[in-house]
Length: 215
Ligand code: HEM
Image (tube, rainbow, N blue to C red; front, side):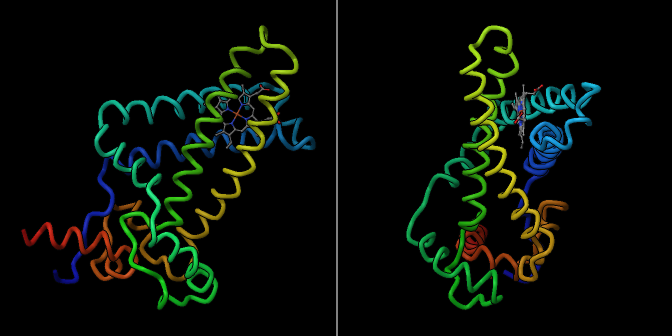
């Protein structure tokens, strides 16, 4: 295959990514003003609480829509995030040299998602489920659930917020600023990456699509 551009993310995958990201960032920021005591004054008018609930509705509806109408691709992505093997162990061993010393020599060939992306997808899925359950109880159970239950829900919601927030910041850094991930942003913005980048960063996936094109 020549060094041309290859489709990495379909238009549907990009719509899912960006709408869900927008909802997540809105939820993150409107949650932050409740989480940090000094920012509480920003929540006084009630507008951030309304935005949090609108964001929550989008956060739930968009993935459900994809689970129903694009179920094959969605389950393939979920399956990939939950499938871990030998090359992921290799990734873990090579990750520090790769990300901190820009040394790509020991990095084993990766699939369409590298192990780090798979880890982020896993965290996003698990934290997403925790957000929906605990947030749902805080929202709809505010008048009926016991004070103890609500306290637990806030604690779990906050733990998910801290873990997902840290991963989100790492994800943004890697996607936009890291010197080796030169086409990560354009992949999700325009959907395409060069064959050279695909070969280097997603070797197993590139091999698979090259073979499929020859067959
Ligand atoms: C379906 C998804 C979600 C639902 C239904 C939901 C619902 C809620 C509700 C009802 C509250 C209480 C707000 C109030 O006191 O008026 C809350 C607080 C909060 N939410 Fe969410 N939320 C969701 C997702 C998220 C996400 C994705 C994040 C961050 C990434 C987040 C971060 C927070 C934080 C930090 C608080 C403040 C908790 C505290 O008081 O310590 N939420 N959420």
